[in-house]
Figure 1 (cartoon, rainbow, N blue to C red):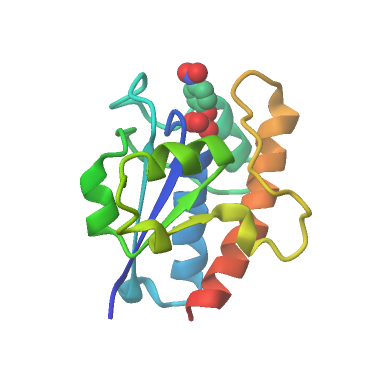
Figure 2: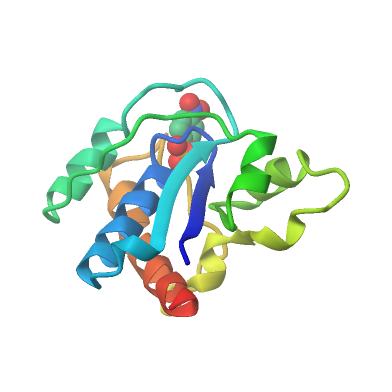
Length: 154
Ligand code: 4NP
């Protein structure tokens, strides 16, 4: 059975594409790519069509990873399409659930940091207005959360 995972942040150019690419990396390394489909989206539409932020790609490159993708906006249909929707912060979580007024799909929506095993964070901090340190931190945090998520699903 294929599990469809959707990672969601605000702009879909920093945190959620990082989560998607890191998850795909861990899944490929485990040899179980046939069991998962990963995607990402932003609750905002300002960056639609854009690749991951160059600072995020630079931080990834330092670890030998190539982050790929093209930003898109989260839409109500995603609640139906995906099995699990991972919000990077509480605003994202609220904005996702705002598209599900009857709460039919609320059980599919989780906070990404619920899967952290080492990091104490409750949210993935938005690195957009900060320096390179913020991007490196987000990658380390997301590796922790993605490892935990993969364990919980396999
Ligand atoms: P992301 O970061 O939500 O992790 O992709 C942001 C990207 C863009 C903006 C804010 C956060 N923005 O305001 O344009």
